[in-house]
Image (cartoon, helix red, strand yellow):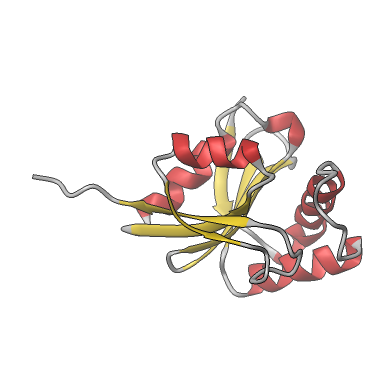
Length: 151
């Protein structure tokens, strides 16, 4: 699969919001706290702030995934189910790594697939939470990646 990375545009909010909505619906362990319209509004806010990088199919307007990063903090990484395993997540993460010496993020304990991905990408667990610090009330793990010093 061939894709390109680009900054998100305001016109992407609907497609990115749908990826977010579908991801929550596909995770039976995750409570549904927001409507599809609220997911679109949330993604639109991140786009407006300049945080979002999109992976788009090179030959079509199809959005394959996105990553939202504010400085060294990654707010969101979502890949369309049909694009998983095609290197989209890795490319988005590599682009984020190229722009920062340190990256931090949180993921849920129940999200074992995300944990495997972050570990493969060189992140290390640095903290755990009991759910009191997130909207969902679910136990979570903080990961951090640090650029290796060059000799």
